[in-house]
Image (cartoon, rainbow, N blue to C red):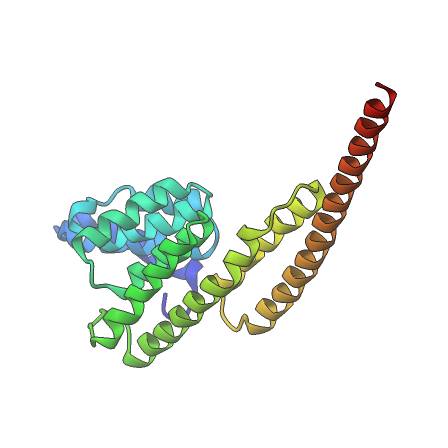
Length: 239
């Protein structure tokens, strides 16, 4: 698994699960194998098969499986189910920055930017306090802290610009939705500075177009009011 040879890892983990009845292996060890099978299939993009293995685990005794299920539901677009999984694990382990980071990324996708920003604040808070996370080095946690801080700052500076745009033109509304999706994907990725800069330029263009359209609408309304006033004046002069 750690060598990223996931197909071979699947074969080995399947053997571990099949050995459970023959060797008297504990359920905890079996659940670990099922969880790793789920992780392999998740990485390979086979989300349905990943869920099948994770659902075999008693989640009350194996937190990581619930977290992985949340990630899969997010990939499948079932955002409410993903949120439920993340909430459950955070109720049990509220100091884990990895779980807060995952929740923040999910909340961006759910268009809850302010709550996402707060989730990223939690990531920074717990890492700065020196919280230990199993399987994570201090270097990895420091990188996660930096990414969370960048994501929070970008959220607070970029997203309000998109949501404040009062769009009526269908083409522009579609452009905004496309930009929103791409920002979500960019924040979830790594080495995304160039992508973010490109999206900022597109937002600026949309803001300019929107500003021009609003001015045009205002001008049309003003002309309409002028014509209406003229008509009233003519009617009054005929009395």
